Length: 323
Image 1 (cartoon, rainbow, N blue to C red):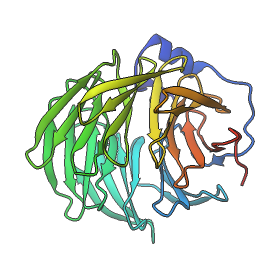
Image 2 (cartoon, one colour; image 1 turned 30 degrees about the horizontal axis):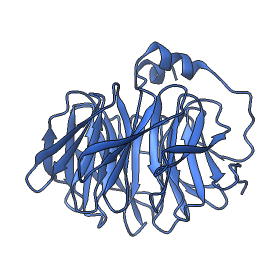
Image 3 (cartoon, rainbow, N blue to C red; image 1 turned 90 degrees about the vertical axis):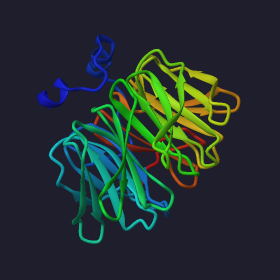
Image 4 (cartoon, rainbow, N blue to C red; image 1 turned 135 degrees about the vertical axis):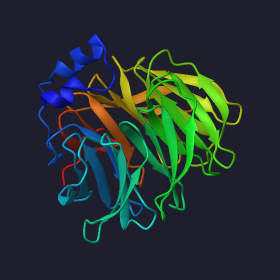
Protein backbone atom coordinates (compact mmCIF):
# COMPACT_ATOMS: atom_id res chain seq x y z
CA UNK A 1 0.00 0.00 0.00
CA UNK A 2 2.91 2.40 0.53
CA UNK A 3 3.58 2.37 -3.22
CA UNK A 4 -0.08 3.16 -3.90
CA UNK A 5 -0.19 6.11 -1.52
CA UNK A 6 2.92 7.60 -3.08
CA UNK A 7 1.12 8.27 -6.38
CA UNK A 8 -2.36 9.07 -5.13
CA UNK A 9 -4.57 11.07 -7.52
CA UNK A 10 -5.16 14.77 -6.59
CA UNK A 11 -2.11 15.75 -4.55
CA UNK A 12 -3.10 18.24 -1.88
CA UNK A 13 -2.80 18.51 1.87
CA UNK A 14 -6.57 18.53 2.22
CA UNK A 15 -6.93 15.35 0.20
CA UNK A 16 -4.30 13.48 2.16
CA UNK A 17 -5.95 14.57 5.39
CA UNK A 18 -9.31 13.20 4.24
CA UNK A 19 -7.76 9.91 3.14
CA UNK A 20 -6.26 9.48 6.56
CA UNK A 21 -9.61 9.97 8.32
CA UNK A 22 -11.85 7.10 9.31
CA UNK A 23 -15.51 6.76 10.23
CA UNK A 24 -16.95 4.74 13.11
CA UNK A 25 -19.86 3.28 11.14
CA UNK A 26 -19.86 -0.48 10.53
CA UNK A 27 -21.01 -1.81 7.18
CA UNK A 28 -24.24 -3.80 7.09
CA UNK A 29 -23.89 -5.35 3.64
CA UNK A 30 -21.19 -4.99 1.03
CA UNK A 31 -19.19 -6.70 -1.69
CA UNK A 32 -15.84 -7.73 -0.20
CA UNK A 33 -12.90 -9.13 -2.10
CA UNK A 34 -10.67 -6.36 -3.40
CA UNK A 35 -7.36 -5.84 -1.65
CA UNK A 36 -7.12 -2.17 -2.55
CA UNK A 37 -9.14 0.95 -3.28
CA UNK A 38 -12.18 0.34 -5.50
CA UNK A 39 -11.66 2.92 -8.25
CA UNK A 40 -14.43 2.14 -10.70
CA UNK A 41 -17.65 0.17 -11.11
CA UNK A 42 -20.04 -0.56 -13.98
CA UNK A 43 -23.38 -2.39 -14.18
CA UNK A 44 -24.02 -5.02 -16.87
CA UNK A 45 -26.48 -4.31 -19.70
CA UNK A 46 -28.97 -6.80 -18.23
CA UNK A 47 -28.59 -5.28 -14.77
CA UNK A 48 -27.64 -8.50 -13.00
CA UNK A 49 -23.87 -8.11 -12.57
CA UNK A 50 -21.37 -5.53 -11.42
CA UNK A 51 -17.83 -5.01 -12.70
CA UNK A 52 -15.16 -3.34 -10.58
CA UNK A 53 -11.55 -2.25 -10.91
CA UNK A 54 -9.11 -1.66 -8.08
CA UNK A 55 -5.68 -0.60 -6.91
CA UNK A 56 -5.09 -4.32 -6.29
CA UNK A 57 -4.57 -4.59 -10.09
CA UNK A 58 -7.66 -6.78 -10.58
CA UNK A 59 -11.00 -6.59 -12.35
CA UNK A 60 -13.76 -8.40 -10.49
CA UNK A 61 -17.24 -9.53 -11.51
CA UNK A 62 -20.08 -9.67 -8.97
CA UNK A 63 -23.66 -10.87 -8.79
CA UNK A 64 -25.69 -7.78 -7.90
CA UNK A 65 -28.52 -9.66 -6.18
CA UNK A 66 -26.34 -11.91 -3.99
CA UNK A 67 -23.40 -9.48 -3.78
CA UNK A 68 -21.10 -12.46 -4.28
CA UNK A 69 -17.90 -12.44 -6.32
CA UNK A 70 -18.20 -14.42 -9.56
CA UNK A 71 -14.85 -13.94 -11.27
CA UNK A 72 -11.42 -12.33 -10.95
CA UNK A 73 -9.57 -11.05 -14.01
CA UNK A 74 -5.90 -10.68 -13.27
CA UNK A 75 -3.51 -9.49 -15.96
CA UNK A 76 -2.94 -5.78 -15.38
CA UNK A 77 0.32 -4.76 -13.73
CA UNK A 78 -0.98 -1.63 -12.01
CA UNK A 79 -4.15 -0.05 -10.66
CA UNK A 80 -7.35 -0.52 -12.72
CA UNK A 81 -9.17 2.80 -13.05
CA UNK A 82 -11.85 2.27 -15.68
CA UNK A 83 -14.15 -0.61 -16.62
CA UNK A 84 -17.07 -1.09 -19.02
CA UNK A 85 -19.27 -3.88 -20.36
CA UNK A 86 -19.66 -4.41 -24.09
CA UNK A 87 -23.33 -4.38 -25.19
CA UNK A 88 -23.68 -8.19 -25.26
CA UNK A 89 -22.45 -8.46 -21.67
CA UNK A 90 -20.08 -11.26 -22.67
CA UNK A 91 -16.94 -9.13 -22.89
CA UNK A 92 -15.59 -6.28 -20.77
CA UNK A 93 -12.83 -3.72 -21.14
CA UNK A 94 -10.56 -2.25 -18.49
CA UNK A 95 -8.12 0.68 -18.32
CA UNK A 96 -5.04 0.66 -16.12
CA UNK A 97 -2.13 2.65 -14.81
CA UNK A 98 0.05 0.10 -16.63
CA UNK A 99 -0.68 2.26 -19.72
CA UNK A 100 -2.88 -0.37 -21.38
CA UNK A 101 -6.48 -1.33 -21.93
CA UNK A 102 -7.52 -4.97 -21.96
CA UNK A 103 -10.54 -6.62 -23.58
CA UNK A 104 -11.63 -9.72 -21.66
CA UNK A 105 -13.91 -12.67 -22.39
CA UNK A 106 -16.11 -13.45 -19.39
CA UNK A 107 -16.72 -16.98 -20.67
CA UNK A 108 -13.23 -18.07 -19.66
CA UNK A 109 -11.56 -14.95 -18.24
CA UNK A 110 -9.12 -14.84 -21.13
CA UNK A 111 -7.50 -11.72 -22.56
CA UNK A 112 -8.98 -11.14 -26.01
CA UNK A 113 -6.94 -8.09 -26.93
CA UNK A 114 -4.60 -5.51 -25.41
CA UNK A 115 -4.62 -1.88 -26.53
CA UNK A 116 -1.31 -0.03 -26.33
CA UNK A 117 -0.54 3.56 -27.20
CA UNK A 118 -0.76 5.74 -24.09
CA UNK A 119 2.59 6.92 -22.79
CA UNK A 120 1.46 7.00 -19.16
CA UNK A 121 -1.32 5.88 -16.80
CA UNK A 122 -4.74 5.28 -18.37
CA UNK A 123 -7.43 6.81 -16.14
CA UNK A 124 -10.72 5.98 -17.82
CA UNK A 125 -12.50 4.15 -20.62
CA UNK A 126 -15.86 4.57 -22.37
CA UNK A 127 -17.65 2.73 -25.18
CA UNK A 128 -20.01 3.79 -27.94
CA UNK A 129 -23.50 2.29 -27.71
CA UNK A 130 -22.74 -0.29 -30.39
CA UNK A 131 -19.59 -1.34 -28.56
CA UNK A 132 -17.42 -1.01 -31.64
CA UNK A 133 -15.38 1.98 -30.50
CA UNK A 134 -13.67 2.79 -27.21
CA UNK A 135 -12.14 5.99 -25.90
CA UNK A 136 -9.57 6.32 -23.12
CA UNK A 137 -8.10 9.22 -21.19
CA UNK A 138 -4.58 9.22 -19.83
CA UNK A 139 -1.93 10.98 -17.85
CA UNK A 140 -0.10 11.67 -21.12
CA UNK A 141 -2.74 14.41 -21.57
CA UNK A 142 -4.32 12.65 -24.54
CA UNK A 143 -7.61 11.02 -25.41
CA UNK A 144 -7.20 7.94 -27.58
CA UNK A 145 -9.92 6.35 -29.68
CA UNK A 146 -9.76 2.62 -30.46
CA UNK A 147 -11.33 0.13 -32.84
CA UNK A 148 -12.51 -2.60 -30.46
CA UNK A 149 -12.41 -5.31 -33.11
CA UNK A 150 -8.93 -4.70 -34.47
CA UNK A 151 -7.22 -3.08 -31.50
CA UNK A 152 -6.00 -0.25 -33.68
CA UNK A 153 -5.78 3.35 -32.47
CA UNK A 154 -8.14 5.44 -34.61
CA UNK A 155 -7.53 8.88 -33.16
CA UNK A 156 -5.16 10.64 -30.82
CA UNK A 157 -6.85 13.78 -29.46
CA UNK A 158 -4.57 16.41 -28.01
CA UNK A 159 -5.43 19.70 -26.35
CA UNK A 160 -5.74 19.12 -22.62
CA UNK A 161 -2.94 20.64 -20.57
CA UNK A 162 -2.95 18.01 -17.80
CA UNK A 163 -4.03 14.43 -17.04
CA UNK A 164 -7.27 13.38 -18.73
CA UNK A 165 -9.29 11.71 -15.98
CA UNK A 166 -12.68 10.99 -17.55
CA UNK A 167 -14.26 10.30 -20.94
CA UNK A 168 -17.89 9.73 -22.00
CA UNK A 169 -19.59 9.27 -25.36
CA UNK A 170 -22.70 11.14 -26.45
CA UNK A 171 -25.35 9.10 -28.32
CA UNK A 172 -24.39 10.77 -31.62
CA UNK A 173 -20.77 9.63 -31.30
CA UNK A 174 -19.24 12.86 -30.06
CA UNK A 175 -16.96 12.54 -27.06
CA UNK A 176 -16.64 14.50 -23.82
CA UNK A 177 -13.44 14.53 -21.75
CA UNK A 178 -12.52 16.00 -18.38
CA UNK A 179 -9.07 16.87 -17.11
CA UNK A 180 -6.89 18.02 -14.24
CA UNK A 181 -6.56 21.23 -16.28
CA UNK A 182 -10.00 22.17 -14.83
CA UNK A 183 -11.77 21.91 -18.20
CA UNK A 184 -14.08 19.76 -20.27
CA UNK A 185 -13.63 19.31 -23.99
CA UNK A 186 -16.18 18.17 -26.57
CA UNK A 187 -14.74 16.37 -29.59
CA UNK A 188 -15.90 15.58 -33.11
CA UNK A 189 -14.37 12.16 -33.69
CA UNK A 190 -14.97 12.05 -37.44
CA UNK A 191 -12.82 15.14 -37.88
CA UNK A 192 -10.63 14.54 -34.84
CA UNK A 193 -11.26 18.11 -33.73
CA UNK A 194 -12.16 19.90 -30.52
CA UNK A 195 -15.55 21.58 -30.93
CA UNK A 196 -16.06 23.05 -27.45
CA UNK A 197 -14.01 23.97 -24.39
CA UNK A 198 -16.03 24.21 -21.17
CA UNK A 199 -14.66 25.99 -18.11
CA UNK A 200 -16.04 26.80 -14.70
CA UNK A 201 -14.33 24.50 -12.22
CA UNK A 202 -11.37 25.95 -10.34
CA UNK A 203 -9.68 22.63 -9.69
CA UNK A 204 -9.21 19.18 -11.22
CA UNK A 205 -12.10 17.38 -12.92
CA UNK A 206 -12.20 13.79 -11.68
CA UNK A 207 -15.38 12.36 -13.20
CA UNK A 208 -18.10 13.09 -15.75
CA UNK A 209 -21.51 11.71 -16.70
CA UNK A 210 -23.62 12.31 -19.82
CA UNK A 211 -27.40 11.91 -19.97
CA UNK A 212 -28.89 9.19 -22.17
CA UNK A 213 -30.22 11.79 -24.63
CA UNK A 214 -26.85 13.55 -24.83
CA UNK A 215 -28.27 16.94 -23.88
CA UNK A 216 -26.71 17.30 -20.45
CA UNK A 217 -23.43 16.52 -18.71
CA UNK A 218 -22.31 16.60 -15.10
CA UNK A 219 -18.73 16.96 -13.87
CA UNK A 220 -17.20 16.22 -10.45
CA UNK A 221 -14.23 18.18 -9.20
CA UNK A 222 -11.64 18.54 -6.49
CA UNK A 223 -13.12 22.05 -6.00
CA UNK A 224 -15.93 20.34 -4.05
CA UNK A 225 -18.69 20.84 -6.62
CA UNK A 226 -20.63 18.99 -9.28
CA UNK A 227 -21.43 21.24 -12.24
CA UNK A 228 -24.25 20.85 -14.74
CA UNK A 229 -23.71 21.61 -18.42
CA UNK A 230 -26.06 22.12 -21.36
CA UNK A 231 -24.26 20.44 -24.23
CA UNK A 232 -26.39 22.14 -26.88
CA UNK A 233 -25.57 25.67 -25.73
CA UNK A 234 -22.24 24.51 -24.26
CA UNK A 235 -22.86 26.47 -21.10
CA UNK A 236 -22.95 25.83 -17.36
CA UNK A 237 -26.51 25.70 -16.03
CA UNK A 238 -26.04 24.83 -12.38
CA UNK A 239 -23.79 23.89 -9.49
CA UNK A 240 -24.46 21.15 -6.94
CA UNK A 241 -22.82 21.95 -3.61
CA UNK A 242 -22.93 19.88 -0.46
CA UNK A 243 -19.81 17.75 -0.23
CA UNK A 244 -17.32 18.69 2.47
CA UNK A 245 -14.21 18.36 0.35
CA UNK A 246 -13.19 17.02 -3.04
CA UNK A 247 -15.68 15.20 -5.30
CA UNK A 248 -14.28 12.22 -7.19
CA UNK A 249 -17.20 10.75 -9.08
CA UNK A 250 -20.66 11.42 -10.52
CA UNK A 251 -23.37 9.34 -12.23
CA UNK A 252 -26.79 10.01 -13.76
CA UNK A 253 -29.88 7.84 -13.32
CA UNK A 254 -31.26 6.10 -16.43
CA UNK A 255 -33.95 8.78 -16.83
CA UNK A 256 -31.50 11.62 -16.11
CA UNK A 257 -33.58 13.05 -13.27
CA UNK A 258 -31.28 12.05 -10.44
CA UNK A 259 -27.54 12.17 -9.90
CA UNK A 260 -25.14 10.47 -7.53
CA UNK A 261 -21.81 11.84 -6.35
CA UNK A 262 -19.11 10.73 -3.95
CA UNK A 263 -15.95 12.15 -2.50
CA UNK A 264 -13.59 12.78 0.36
CA UNK A 265 -16.32 13.27 2.97
CA UNK A 266 -17.13 9.53 2.65
CA UNK A 267 -20.75 10.30 1.68
CA UNK A 268 -22.68 9.26 -1.40
CA UNK A 269 -25.06 12.11 -2.20
CA UNK A 270 -28.29 11.88 -4.21
CA UNK A 271 -29.40 14.96 -6.15
CA UNK A 272 -32.48 16.21 -7.96
CA UNK A 273 -30.82 17.51 -11.13
CA UNK A 274 -33.64 19.84 -12.26
CA UNK A 275 -34.16 21.36 -8.83
CA UNK A 276 -30.40 21.34 -8.20
CA UNK A 277 -30.98 20.16 -4.65
CA UNK A 278 -29.61 17.37 -2.51
CA UNK A 279 -32.25 14.75 -1.70
CA UNK A 280 -30.29 12.62 0.76
CA UNK A 281 -26.88 11.31 1.68
CA UNK A 282 -25.98 7.63 1.97
CA UNK A 283 -23.62 7.22 4.91
CA UNK A 284 -21.62 4.05 5.51
CA UNK A 285 -18.24 4.18 3.81
CA UNK A 286 -15.36 4.44 6.24
CA UNK A 287 -13.08 6.28 3.84
CA UNK A 288 -13.41 8.43 0.67
CA UNK A 289 -15.75 7.30 -2.09
CA UNK A 290 -14.11 6.93 -5.51
CA UNK A 291 -16.90 5.59 -7.72
CA UNK A 292 -20.72 5.55 -7.95
CA UNK A 293 -23.27 4.06 -10.33
CA UNK A 294 -27.02 3.53 -10.66
CA UNK A 295 -28.49 0.07 -11.10
CA UNK A 296 -30.40 -0.35 -14.37
CA UNK A 297 -33.75 -0.17 -12.56
CA UNK A 298 -32.87 3.26 -11.16
CA UNK A 299 -33.98 2.09 -7.71
CA UNK A 300 -30.57 1.14 -6.37
CA UNK A 301 -27.23 2.92 -6.12
CA UNK A 302 -23.76 1.41 -5.93
CA UNK A 303 -20.58 2.90 -4.53
CA UNK A 304 -16.98 1.87 -4.02
CA UNK A 305 -14.06 3.50 -2.35
CA UNK A 306 -10.91 3.68 -0.32
CA UNK A 307 -12.30 1.21 2.22
CA UNK A 308 -11.97 -1.49 -0.50
CA UNK A 309 -15.66 -2.46 -0.57
CA UNK A 310 -18.68 -1.95 -2.83
CA UNK A 311 -21.98 -1.00 -1.23
CA UNK A 312 -25.52 -1.26 -2.61
CA UNK A 313 -28.11 1.29 -1.51
CA UNK A 314 -31.87 1.57 -1.72
CA UNK A 315 -32.60 4.91 -3.35
CA UNK A 316 -35.95 5.40 -1.64
CA UNK A 317 -34.95 4.61 1.93
CA UNK A 318 -31.26 5.46 1.77
CA UNK A 319 -30.41 2.20 3.52
CA UNK A 320 -27.80 -0.36 2.55
CA UNK A 321 -29.30 -3.40 0.84
CA UNK A 322 -28.42 -6.81 2.26
CA UNK A 323 -28.27 -9.75 -0.17
